[in-house]
Image (tube, rainbow, N blue to C red; front, side, top):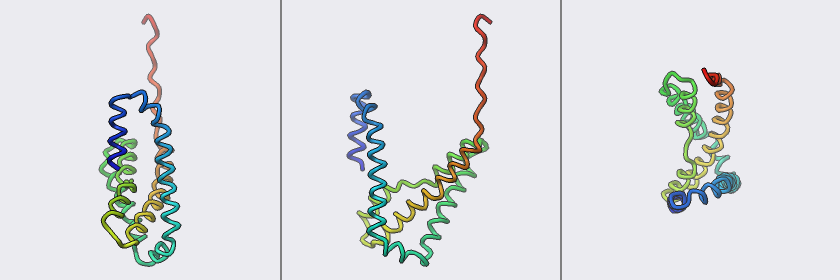
Length: 150
């Protein structure tokens, strides 16, 4: 994870125009790679996912996501926009980093399965929450410009 990040930061520092040109394509490639990883990972671990049902693991993941969202939301202050962002940002986990740590440090396939199920649950819970919070957001009224010559 650090090598591509370091290369990208170096390119951005040395040639910002080049970095800006490649940024949209790299964002799409990154999203596509994560989607492929989720689909393949889930496909290879279907039996492990089914064995996770009834163990309390899915309940623990749901509880963790809801609790972290609530903590971020509550401690986000009084501004509704900041509260929403804090709640969503606190609940959102870096699945890529978690998978790297999980693969490198654990041999139990249930670790990877739990991470993949957690990633799906994050999407299923946080995307609708973001949509709901976004629909409630108040758009600030445009500030009137003073007339020329006043």
